[in-house]
Length: 236
Length: 392
Image (cartoon, rainbow over all chains, first blue to last red; front, side, top):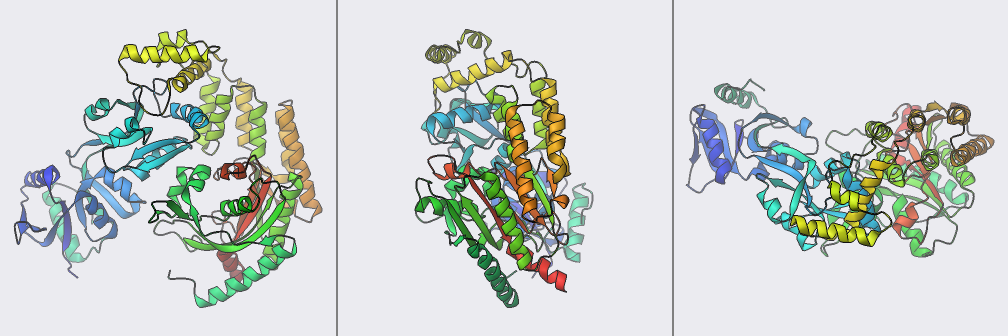
């Protein structure tokens, strides 16, 4: 078992590029090692840091299990996939990219529903008329449950949706949705509207630290060196 | 933890035999409901909150199933399978595993897999008598298994319901207050909102449309909503109809016009919810502050008092029993008497046994109407831990 520090970095797309740019701004250079299409990397001048390029959603799992010491991933994924966030990880620094709001959106024609509190009355009539609760389509099952239940809404059912969530109300497979949006244009195009108090989370990419990884002396020293270089206070 | 230790297994089996023997001798037939249950039934009864603490999974047929988080709903389903009309009195007992998700670091008193030994009584005509009988039997079983000291925490969800039913307010407000019952801060905020003017502003909604709606003419209201959406270029999508949206707007208009909740009504509800007293002092105290609150609340207090007397007559030490109005909020299906048996060594967060009345659960599970029902379960691992600790 290596005593090195494992740094999990998004493996592709804008998130990977922006992570590299964020590091480069402090003069830290991220490099792939081995074959061009490989998933291992290093940081110039930090011999005790192993970089693992993995998908942003798997980075959360790696931090939660302790396989990675630090990583870059979205706050939405952290809050969705880790039950006791504060005990498992620490969100060290929001990075200013990968912005996405997790919102509750309803059909724009629901002109009697402006706030989350208005859903309860609508749900009661809906159950009487249709014999079932509202269906909420989302890929954020845990975030949705915590938010709606936290607002006192009891009579609703979550349906997992892994793609094209905005289309589910028009298609009739769901009645409202919880999804990410950046400009809101897709929601509008699908006849949906965000509730006035329906922004659950303003998410962005974060530098996240695992509290449950094996923080060997070598890993600690490497982490502190890197954080110093990035202008962050030492954490470990 | 990898399974129960062999010594624990034997001790738990012996303890279960003791508990079940008492239940069966009292006329509670031993049953074994399914461990794997359709998740939909639980989601209907408990709501999505279920997913936060239950092992829910999709099987190879695409059906959503769960490992039962307790045995009450499974026993209700078993009763309905035997008596679809729910027209028979029945007494059941059980001992078997239940499963609840626990976050990493949960203590030994909160295992994710544990055994419940319990009883459920369906269809009894005399609710007070059935409540008392349930608690008395559970205490007798606990004693027989070796528990010598405990604390009894009780509540009565029926009192809150009766108080709301008597209070003069639109049904919509009542529903909202019931929904907020389990969240003290939200209940407080809602009471404040309903008792200040206006209870619910209609300002954020299309004014001209709301003014044009006539509560006496639902069909006309539906047409007006459809015309408004058309005019605004908003497409009507999804299962919700223009008639439902019109009904929603009428509700908002009615809320805006309704006189706010009387401050004394809000104060009465607040002081009830804040009641924490020895159980024996509750009835006089409630009568004192409720004054002439209403006939339904008065009847609920009488029923409370009668149950207390039945318990005392059966030898329960009611003098040391505690009452908290808030107690029982956290389980959605309780409708009346609720109780927990607490051992000091484990504390109030890990009761050794608990139960209560749930008259609307059977209907939610498929019975043709509400059925009188009361039950309770013993957390057998905790009981064993307490009894062993006392001996050590």
